[in-house]
Image (cartoon, rainbow, N blue to C red; front, side):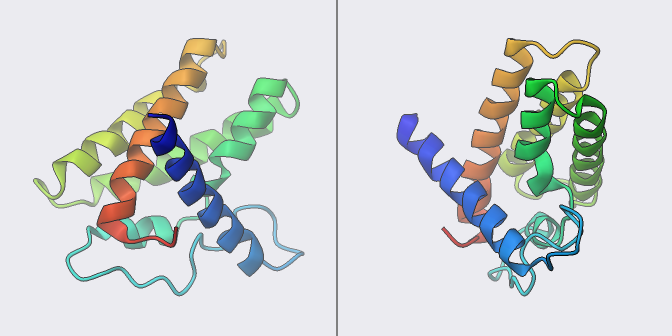
Length: 148
């Protein structure tokens, strides 16, 4: 479990670094696609291209940090809501029956994001989001072949 979490965090960190390195310094966070130039491997779900072109998904860790710290809570909540909406749209575009494990993992993230957007941020909601993100990233890596 611990090694999978490190792999998940490594993938998310790589996506964040690639996104940050490709963004211009004057762009607001999340304004650039997560992985510009990403080419999905043959047979990869459409969700892979969608996430590579996303502008809000990679903002989840920073927004959660703000929300957890109580600093910029309104901004953090709006960024998490944008990430949830973006992911929900991407999952909604998946053809029925395509990669059910990946869809289920994405649905768990969507549900966990809704819980952290509630009126009170609980430790349980934070833990559920982290767990669901770990599982989602674990499903994404082999399906999408994102850089490790």
